[in-house]
Figure 1 (cartoon, rainbow, N blue to C red):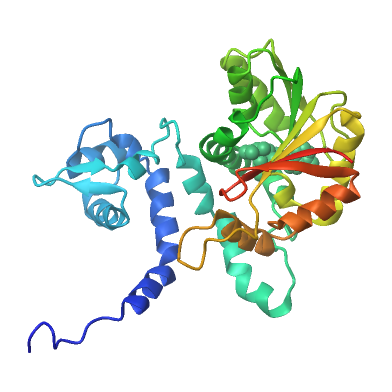
Figure 2 (figure 1 turned 60 degrees about the horizontal axis):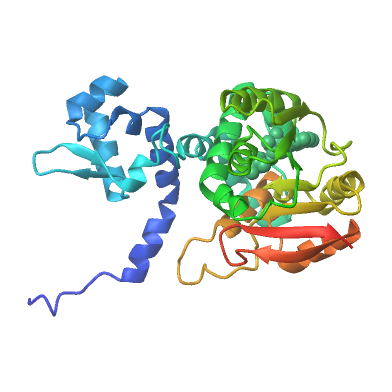
Length: 347
Ligand SMILES: C[S@@+](CC[C@H](N)C(=O)[O-])C[C@H]1O[C@@H](n2cnc3c(N)ncnc32)[C@H](O)[C@@H]1O
């Protein structure tokens, strides 16, 4: 039989097969992060025994994991059998400027799996909301009782903000403002970068008390103690008043319309007539998925659907929501990007 006559694989079926194994990619990348495998590299290639010794992982299973992650594009092997990180693999290192180390751990953690497992049930009966071991739904309640998971979550969010949100926020012109408030600002990665890039600005970070306390330590360590203040509290009760610009980055996505409206009304009351709000979110009506390309918002939306409460919104969802809170969208930056920045002003 010649090569031309030999039956070939259906490439569509092979692509689908790869998708069906996606769960293994998540777990393999998350496991490599947990074990500190990428952190065992220090710029040079390493042989298997070096990596095994640095991580405490037996060489047998380690070789199999490295081989598989090599196929996924994280490692290369040299002719002499040494392993090296690819530029993508470098992003799994904790110290990389665009690290996704904690994000990889969080995506493969058990509370994320519980959301994933929920999808068939949500599709069948339409009830959204993960049932956590404590019986509550949603993830804020669960994380509140799991300090280690919440810390990993906060670190993951800081990585996401540094890699994806920060370039968008830093392209905004803050020259007319003197003080900003980052509501739900996490560990302060965004506020810190914004203050560093705009030496005339002062900033307030508002978040849950433990997270705000950690942010204060980090902003202090970054030399920003004098220009920043961190306040712990509940954004559904009230937010600090009187600032020029309020920032909500990846916050509205976690809440249903009633809660989002309550939060936006608190911000509208706090900002005064000449204030503004910058809301950074993905749009669910952006294109991108049909050709197989990655669409951040669509996958986040499935997570929100399963975990309960939030959603990735369309442009028109946002218009209705802001309008109900007495606000309107003045312009949108990076409208077709993975995240977009909406500049919001009072109506
Ligand atoms: C998805 S994270 C986004 C963090 C950050 N803005 C970013 O872009 O990476 C949502 C943030 O909202 C905070 N948060 C949740 N509920 C809150 C509440 N009731 N009051 C204040 N902050 C809250 C969380 O602690 C978390 O830092």
